[in-house]
Image (cartoon, rainbow, N blue to C red; front, top):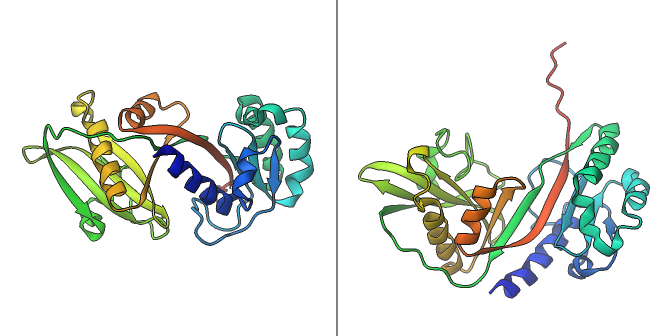
Length: 256
């Protein structure tokens, strides 16, 4: 299963970083020019300034041409293990450089793909919601990760949510958004008083399996230091597949 999804992942990432799938298996850092290719995931408006991905071998960087000379210098002598570009000291150098152009480096996300078959024992009552049925929960501060918050996102619509219930009380919710055609990203929120009971991994597993039944691709992302979320991914039948980061425009909130 993982191998099949991994090959599809390389094709998807190639769309997003304006390269070829084989570039993620190269022995050297690959640097490309930005493009808004149809079917890509997009988490920031407009033309990307810098996006960077490693699948564990080399690193592929899509960046504005003004950064290419700097990036070639930064990548020099790191081609044998290109993922070193994601280490803190190199991300700091990247941040200093992009700030010259009004950008800053954003979060580094560890991303997961399904591996193998995992079943979930339904130890509690669950309720499934689809598309517009999710709408009443927008703006609910209990679910900032399971669904778009505080309002629907047209670019990445929420497709499915599954709720765990204790009587009529919601214990947690897992949801998925279609970030690219047939690519469903899963998020999870469990209310504090119900944590450490296996509810998160159960809901994520149920949703993962439902997405696979629909012939779509489930994927899961966590912040680099969110160990609890990473454990949920692993318990729910996911395996680390890639790491990504990007530069975002610095917002000037000062009022003159």
